[in-house]
Image (cartoon, rainbow, N blue to C red; front, side, top):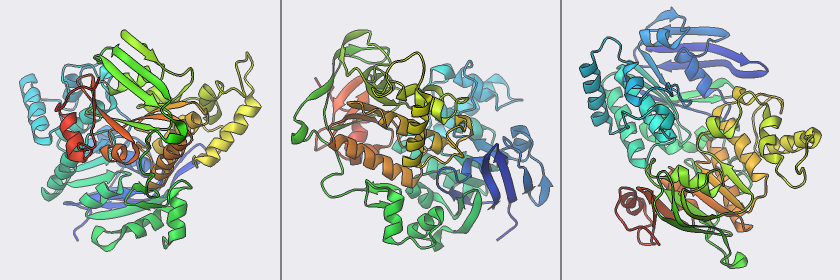
Length: 507
C-alpha cells in the first residue's frame, strides 16, 4: 500500500473533565473509503473535528502527504484538501441555501456558481430548495446542503460524520454509491455512521475507537460483524452473553445494527389488553403544511409516520405533542405528552445547562415533583442520576454541561428524560438518530415495552426499516396529507411508492 494521504498519530484531546481522545491513530489512503466505528462517546466526532480543523489536539501529530502540519481551522484543512461534513450543522441560518453554497465557491462568478450547484445536485441526486432560508429548513434539507457544500469544493479527502442519519433510503443509497465513485477516482473518504450495514457495505478498511483509543484497524474483508461489535464494547470475543448485554434488557441480540426481538413482538399494534382506546385524534387539521389531516392514535400501539422530509411530518409531530396548534380543525391530545424532537440542539437541550438542569426541563412536570416556585433540586439530581445510569450516558457527572457530550449521549439524555415522564403518549422524531448499535437496540426495545404497557407512541422516522420493524400501523406523509399503508403495501418498495406521492389520503 502507498503512503497514506493523511496520518493522525497519538491524538489526545480533553474537554474539561472529559477525556475525548486518549492516543487515537488513523491512517487514510488515496482511493479508499475508511469506516470509523465506536460506541457513543468513543471519540469519533472529536477525531474527525481534529482532522477538519475544528478542534486542536492537546498532543499528537498530523501528517498530510508525509508532511507534518497543524490544522488550526477549517480553512487550514481545506487548504490541504480536507473537507468535513459535520453532524452538527455549520450553515448560516440567516442566508439562503444558494448563498450558503456560494460561500464555498469563492472566486466563481454567479453564473458559474449556479451552474456548479445545479450540476452537483444532478450528479448526487440531493435536491435542496435553493431560495429558502436555512432557518426555514428541516434537518434533512440542512444535511443535504452540508454535503453539497463540501462536494462543491472538490476535496481530496472527504470526511463525513453521520451523513445519512436524516436522508431518505434512496438518498442514503445514492450517497454511499457516490462515496465509492469518489474512492475509485483516487480520492479518500472517511465515514462515521452508526448503521453497521451502511459502513460495512461501502468501506474498504475499518477503524474501531473505544474510550478515545484506536483498538483496531483492518481491511473490511478480514473482519466480521461479531468481531467489530466485540472491539466496540471491549470484550475481545463477542459471545452470546456479551451480545445480549450490548443489546440491552429489552432485546435478544444485535444483528448488523438492528434490533431483533422475540417472535410476534417486532411491531406494536393496539393490543386487546388495552382495547381500542383512542388516546389522541386529529380531525380536519390544517397547518402551514398540513392539509385536512385525520388521524387516531390508540393506546398500546406504535404508529409509524414515514415520508420524504418537508411533507408535514415535523408539523404533525409538533401538533400531536401540544407544541403547536392547528390553524384549522380539532386536535384532541392528552394533557401530558412526552416528546423527542428531531433537532436535539434547537429543540431538545440547552447547551449551557448541565444534565440535571436539562432533565429538569421535563422532570419538573412530573407529579411527584409538581409545580412549585422552588425546584426540588435534590430530588431532581437523584432522578437525573438514575436516568444517566439507566441509559448509560457517558459523562463525568450530572453536573457536566450538555455541550460537552457527544451527539449520541446528548440524545440519550433527551430520551431518558422524556421516557421518565410516564406520559400516556410519546411522540418521537428520529429517536435513534446518532445512537450506536447498543443504544439503538435498547431504545427500540424500550419503545416496544412502553407500547406493551399501554403507552401510545407516534414514531416519526426517516429510517424506513425502523418504522416497518416497530410500527403496528404505518402512515405516509405526502404533500401535507396522511396516507394509510395497507398490509399489501407494507414493504420498502410499497411505502417508497407512497412517499413519492402514489396513493390516496386516508379519511
